[in-house]
Structure formats: structure tokens, C-alpha cells
Image (cartoon, rainbow, N blue to C red; front, side, top):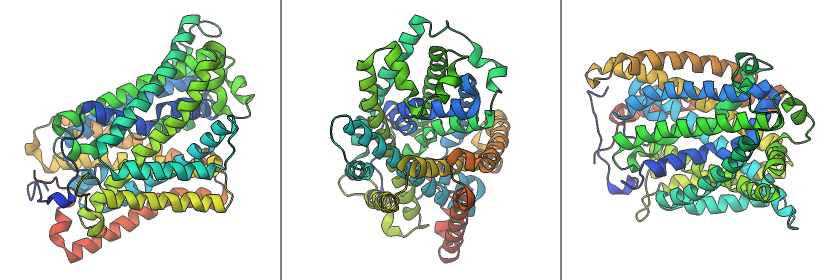
Length: 485
């Protein structure tokens, strides 16, 4: 496919802001989407409780290694891409325009679902935080305030978002690392133990559910390639940011989960979690016990800022997928333009803002719970969608390099490892689908309909790509092709 056309022209009206982001900025944008404090305070205790207890730390290690294997092929192909469509571009160049169209719509669905779902948790957490200070407002008021702030930042230059996210993420890491060090120094409840990494602990309870929670905690790391058109020297920046992101996120989660288990006591961990009315308070209880209330208060505030950092990062990701889909004519071309001054995907940004406001408003009007419904339902749809896209990307890497042998990459990077990760992701997709009700709390019709949204999005994308092929064959052939400088 690359032999037919390697680049396409684009005027400044639909170009993103070039040379805006270095390795550090992209890494922080990606880590922000993974929302480290949110994952540690929210996802990890739930994964321990519903999954495999203390073995959750070992599960993080396994998932980190799998994602590093995925990154090998992902990075190898990134050197030949340079398109802000990321997964969509991979599918289009590796598997053809129809697959590209399907993945584009899955991406738009998934990142919207994640961003809007986290808006629910953000609203609830902010309401709880301010209620402690005597300000009592409904959760949806805080969600709408966040939507408005994100709308302004998403409309403007991407490097402004990157600077804000860098500060917030560094603060998140600092407070959790302080707690980690205090637990490490004291030896935890019963002394340091390597038991959480033993095979018996990893396979205890429900390891399949633990794996799914671990993957959910990493969602966002794959977004490095979304910023390819805005990166400085993308052929160097994107691979480095990808590996840095996986390693930093993985080590942080693994070590913190280990110390959380050690802090509570490996044998006492599950009883401690089961005794809590809200398992997401577990980390804050450990903070009170080992580091003191001052750190806990700081952590409570940063938990809210962590959620905000996540919704801002996911907003940027969604906007770029919508923008590229418009620029390449899958969606109306009026969407695929950038701001004359900020060179941001401002139209796509506004569309995402409106979608978020409509869905949050709908859940508020219906009186649905912002955490058990809005957050849980939508983020699990998003997790499924992103893992489907990772499976497709793995297969696309294999097919792309098979069709382009002149690319001069070795078979381990372009065939063996991507092939193995494709199989692994296919198994994980199966596990998510059969466990969706347990994971999301959505029973009956919703337990079937919600995961089916990913399939529906794929079919819609396939039809849009087919329609483009019929009306504009040249544009169809150029789906996912990098822009000329």
C-alpha cells in the first residue's frame, strides 16, 4: 500500500501545530490519560477485591510485559506512519481502508466513552471533596464545570494542555511515592514480602478479572502516535515516548500495588477490602495509617485533579480522531480543519464537548448514579474498544510489513511479536465480553448492548469507508497516509 502513495498534501487550514511536543510532553500527555492516582486509588483496590487480591501486583507485571511486547511492533510501524489517526491509520495502511474506517469509529466511540465516563467519577469525587468544605452541589454541576474548562483548553494550543498535565501528573506521582516510601521504610504490616509476585497469588481468586482491571489502568498509553503530527522529530520522539510511558506506568502501578498489599498485610488484604463500604477509600486509609492526615488531604485533592487530567487527555485524543476522520473524508470535511491561530482541531474539540454535555445531562436527568452507571458502564465499553483496536493494530503491523518488505525491519519486530500479541488480545477480548456484566455492573439487556456498541461502531465505520470508496476512490486509497511537510 505504501508503494502507491506515501504522503498527501494538506494546506495549513487543516494541519495540526507542528513541532509542539517533545518526548517529555507526549509522555506526560499519555500518562495523564492513564490517570495514575485514579488507577491506584480506584482501579487497584477494586481489582484486588474482585480479582486476585495481593496477586494483583504480579498481574500488573504480566500486563506491563505484554504491553512492552505490543509496543515493539507498534513502534516499528510508527516510523512509517506520521498520521494523527494512530490505530485508525495503522488499520488503514495495514489492513485496508474498510478496516481503517471501522477502527476510526471504534476509536471515536471508545475515547468518548472513556472521557465521558470519567466525567461521572470526576463529578462525584469533586462533590464529595467540596462537601467536606461545606459546599454542597450535585455531582453533575461539577461535571459541567469540568466540561467547560476542558472545552477551553481543548480548543487552544496542545502545548498548553501538555504544560497543565505535566504539573498535575508530577504532583500525583509525588504523593503516591511518599506513601510508597513510608510503607517501604516501616516494612508494612508484617514485613516486606514477595508473595504478591508468586504464581499461587497471581492465579488465586479471579485472575481474568484482575487482568482486565490492569488493562483498564493502562488505557491511554497507546496515544503516543496520536500526537505524531505535532511531535518534534516524530521518528525518534514517538518510540521513546511509547516505551517510557509503558515502563513508567507499569513500574509505578506494580510497585504501588505491591506496597499496598504489604501495607495492609498480604493475608489481611482481602478482609480489609471486604470490610470497606467503598473500596476506593482503601488507599486513603493506608495514607492515614502510614503517612498521616496531611498527605491524605493532599491525595484527596489530587485524586480530583488526576481525574481532570484524564478527561483533558482523553478529550485531546478524541478530538484528533474526529479531526482526522473529517480531514480524510470519512466524516464531513468541515470537521477536519484546524484553528487559524492555535492550529488545534477546534471543530472536533467542540463536537466532543457537546457530546460530553449531552450524555452527562442525560444521566443527570434520568437520575442515574455517576459512578455505578456513567463511569462503570462507559469506561468498560472504552476498555473493550481500545483492546479491540490493539488487536487490530497488532494484525495490521504483520500485514503492513508483509506487503512492504523493503521497510527493512526484522521478523521478530514485524511478525512474531505482533502475531503473539494479537492472539493474547483476542483472548482478553473474549474474557471482557463474557465477564462484562460482572465488570460493569450492567445486567440484562445492557450487559449485551453495551459491549455490542463496539461492534455497531465498527459496522458504521465500515459503511462510511465503503461510501467513501464509491464516491472518492483516491481519498479512500489515501486513508491513514501521512501528510507531506
